[in-house]
Image (cartoon, rainbow, N blue to C red; front, side, top):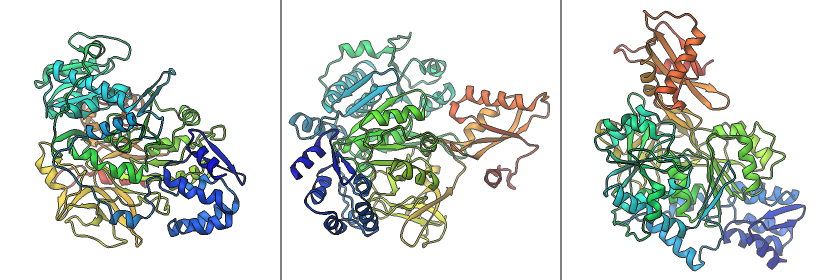
Length: 630
């Protein structure tokens, strides 16, 4: 029975029926070793023996699950596939040595070699891509290695991009997005991703600020680039990655160049401290800040991949993040591939809960990560028709997830949703790891490698139960994965470092057991459906309309998106308003045309004046509090 059981567990879709429950294929030798007890011993014996191998908080659930003969999968979800089953021990023994020279390509090359030698022990590809039209693509690590070499040669030889220069990438979830990421690593160029929702004004600002010498995008964004390219003196080349075979005057054609490109390419040597990517992150009082990360950033995502995502080389991981955000670098690139996992991608123009459930039913996705908005929408659907048994680990990040949603998902699917917290400036900072008892509403505990504290505005540490800023200890040792600073903005960089800490800008408290509880953002940034939106960006777009004299954008509660943008607008004295409702719709469309559509205010209220400080600054906090008190 044991040999048969182990063999079935190792098969792709193998299942073992046991005491009216079922055990699916599991992940990693750790699971298989523990499951030997199940096949060798009675349920009573299993309960006693397994209890010694789980944290105290899991004993009760484990015994209850065995006693009730529920699916064994229900208690295995509390076990880490990577062996992170003791939180304190894992943190104590965490070490991450950073060599002087490092390029993440070394990690990908190692997995390609293991794949070639048969050491990866799975038939899963490195990238598994599907779209709405039924097209499917599977690339191995070896495929990615050869294809990225072609792209690297295009960057160096045709686009004339040199090491250290910035390449702006604006592509949807197409396979080439991953190739560009690897090609930039190979060439030592600095990747600067952007969402396809950006418009001409946004693109101009990013190209100019980042001093990008090359931009790579598709036919949907290229017209916006052409509107502003002449105002971006550093821009030397524009590469079009068309999904329908289009070409465009003034643009290099990737499809044609790829056919002629060589697969012979030597990866550049990089220091761990060399810049590797720039993320634009929204701010409160100005335009988005440029966050710089170095080559060691990819290595630091072992914290994200091994400890939070709990990935192994036989996992199939689906992260739904937009390719323009740091979360895609987290969970759609570095973290899965440092663990040798398969990255699953669904290319679709718009999220659809039914479509997502059908995919989870059809494909053997084992780990799934999405923004809270997605889970709020998923639980609105009838989940009964869908088989979600391939899932073993479900995660959420981007904003706090309602405890009610976590409980509803647990009741209907059988999994808890594990939350994670971090920023564009960091890797994972805090999480409800599998080895921890779940406290719905909590951010969990600090990640291995990070000393997270609650501090006051001057960087003084506060005790349990006190509200304060979330701070990362940076002295005497600066943690790996923390950004180098905001490019060309020493003042804002200096402002986030107080005493021995980097302040994240978020407010929280820590309880007596060391769990962190998110309270609010320390600034006015709005997080809607996973998108971070700076009020300044919305207000700047509104002021361009002749009806607007002044405005203030704040967050407003929303049942599905968590929060949305609401604009308080003071109308120009000389502007005649015939229909307020029509004007509101006109202003919404105006913002959508001026800047990325996700930033537009879904709610608008006309007011005679805005609350201000003595020095004349808008007190958005008063308006925000008013919204959330309703």
